[in-house]
Image (cartoon, rainbow, N blue to C red; front, side, top):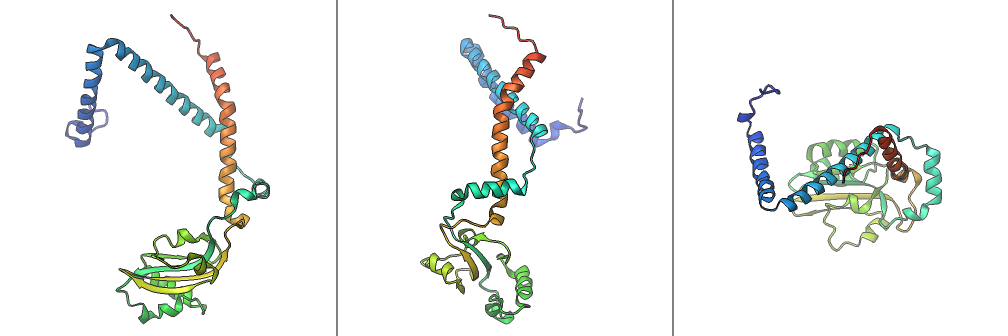
Length: 238
């Protein structure tokens, strides 16, 4: 009977699965026939692995139902103040505009080489509209910091001095290969400084949650085993 209401015999994916399962089973049959003692050892290992998977799954389910995932702003602030040395920057943080367009796009018609400088209030709206039509990549968020290396990861900086690009709040555009690139850096944070709390807030929240998970798992393992022993009688036969 086809319980799913499908004719699996006509299902190519199902046929391939069955074929693969049958071929793998040949190894089991051969080992059991020729080396029964080795086969028994394999079965014991498989059961042990299955038990480990069951324990992991049970712990995850128990944890999901009991873990407090609320992290207050106060907890985040306290962690930030006590662990600032952990967050010292190894890369610049910048606030910037980045635009990457195909080289064949005639950006001069729209005066993009001037508007990317964002000197006028309307420039950003026009850059946004242009980016929607032509951009392969576009980034602008004047209220958020981004790592410089992340912002420019697909920008061929070549021999350009990255330190100078940031420290001089560089505004530049150039064509290389199939694309034209526009970069306008209007603010930065130095390497070896500590980023603002706002920038690190989500990272710190995740750190605190991971610490809770680790602590809960340390307690949960023994407690879960005790509960299971009370519920299920263990009988050992040697």
